[in-house]
Image (cartoon, rainbow, N blue to C red):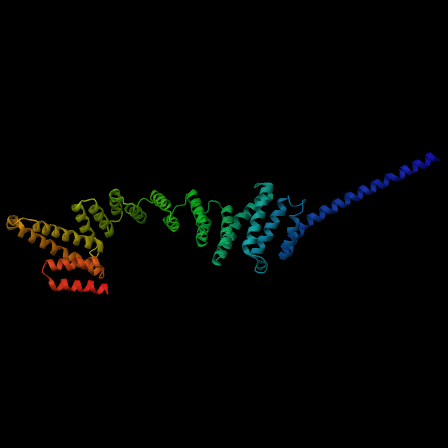
Length: 395
């Protein structure tokens, strides 16, 4: 009897164990079904157009350990948020930049989970390509709203989608400049150069940044890089020339001036600058030739006219000085001729000074030079008129 009693107890436990195991398995199946249903519900709500409910469901799915590792989950999330951006109703529930970023991150996650060649990887890659326009437009919207930091985020997103497309880099550089983030702007211009993008406008912006930062070395490098890319660009040639002249390297600049003239032969200022450099290098004949070419190209060139006036004025002054230092015997022999020749040079200086005065009527150096030259050639009334003009400027 005891044995039978024991046997009954033994067999009575066996089915209970089976029942418990069955219940556990059923519960597990129910849990997996509930987890998968969040993704399914999101897809259904998305198709119905109720994107708020779709968003709630898919956001639950990406936090669940059973569904967060599936490309389908992240692809669906990308579609939901992309739909929100395009929706006139649900688009008001969150900033377009934020929704676009979420869609981008979701599609990127789908690709990373299963690769580009998988079913969802292929679809997500195609979606990412289409998302470029959304990212770019979000950036433009933020830029127009003067939220430059958000604009840059959107443009960076667009760069990740299409790394060889230049537009997003350019727009990001403009936004960084508008935000006074010159480091960020230089980064973007550097990336543009890295993908082979080169335009005079880009180098011009880079030069402007270098000057705003008062970085002469950087400005010089920008100009040199620009000249490598665009060796005949007149603007950069002049920038390079001005840098040489500002650094006191006038003699070394002669070759660059002549090259600039070859590229822009109707630029009167280049001839005037060349004349000035020859003046500084004590080559008066070449200086005179350059100044005459300048006024030939542009009769109203102030610098060239003034310097031609000065050239003749100084020649006259030198002759009068030599005559004044002669002995009586020397003066009686050739002094009068020196003074006569000097007067001719004073006379020759007048048209140039007068033309310069027409261009800049209040320039004191021109007025003073004319006042003295008029006096030397016997035009006393004109000399007094210039003297009165100088006095009037002092008051």
